[in-house]
Image 1 (cartoon, helix red, strand yellow):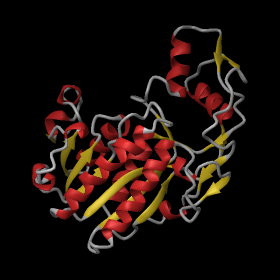
Image 2 (cartoon, helix red, strand yellow):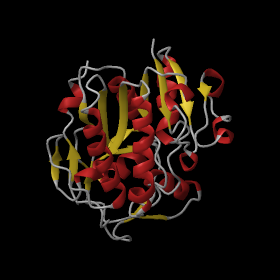
Image 3 (spheres, helix red, strand yellow):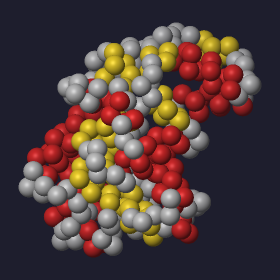
Length: 283
């Protein structure tokens, strides 16, 4: 069994990743910026929790020892995801996340899995594979892309490091941000609203439930045969309005969809989904 450090432990994905690791009997070192949120989770008593605020990194600290010398890192942490266009992703998040991972590697860590984003592909349409060039078009995606490039260069000096970059597409499930589509839909249903306002719904996306995303993240992190960029996706394009209708059917709920109320996003292409062949090749 492995000792796995999970950053961003109290986030949407982090909770599910930790539950998956514990179910497989791995030792978990969980980290987040505040213990106050972690202490209320179902997994808190079953992990070693070590608080880390990215605003307070100590340049004199050996973070590999600080985190009790983990075998593997699953790095989910990232601040300020409410605003993809915020320049702080580049000016603040990028340097400090790079510095932390560099510190961990220099002090002994050699197995790293980091979550990236499908937004790294920018405004390119269609089926996107790991070989599709990254052309990020917002600050968040640019910061993630630059982090991967900088780490790839760093790891040239550490050839024993196993590096996996997981490009996540669209996920949904319990614990998602209240501003996301499904929580907004559930709120409208709970309020017995007569209509649900949304975009035109013609855009095609690639959706997975968060439980499945977490299972893929853990599966990727625990192996070393398949490395580099890995799309974490369904491989199937689904129109947004169809996704909403399917969800309503599964919930045995009805509400009138007010299509076209919101404009289409200016940071996403109309139609894109992931190629999951590399993901499915992992045994």
